[in-house]
Figure (cartoon, rainbow, N blue to C red):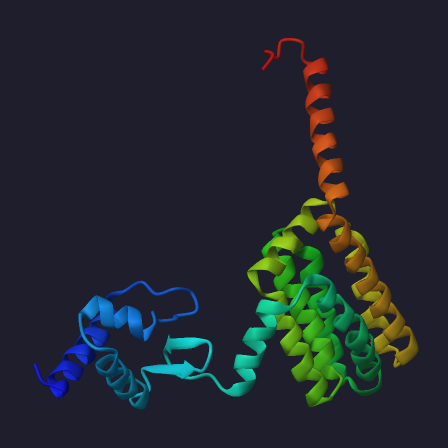
Length: 255
């Protein structure tokens, strides 16, 4: 088999692999060496075949990271992806505490009446939602509406980066712990009302402080939910609850 035939064979096998394999979440492909061994061809043939697929826009490559199926994301999207993977919960809250009170202040100065009405409607959605996922969705929409009403595109871009990190699986797991910790939804609802009222009243200082207090409460809940002490406390409460239930019902069989 000559080199050209070898490359054509590798290209055909790569196309078949991409179409039939269940790829990882990040759609990363195996290494050139792995493909060469799997297809029993030289690495040069694999490299040439990958170059063809890249030229066709079917794959993209990043030095030091690997080869991925699909269109190459822009540099900004790639940076955001890296941030999502490397940011912890406290870093997120530190950034939110720095920018969201400022966004609330700007919204108090710039929000249009129609935008304030949308905020009020979103506040009601957060209060009416009984499903945790729905409440999270409406909460995120409210905070983004405030950010958008601030009228600063750069601030909004930064907010969107933070918001994307909040959608990461690890973040969602921590928020689920916070919800199970007995989060006071009524307090959060009342704080949302206070924030929007301050924005409607064109009171930047009050709006910023209301947002800051809201985020500080949220931060405290997240810290409590992720602490070992909280997990031990919940375990103790569960044991106590079971013991009380057994005492109240003497017919309950012993385990």
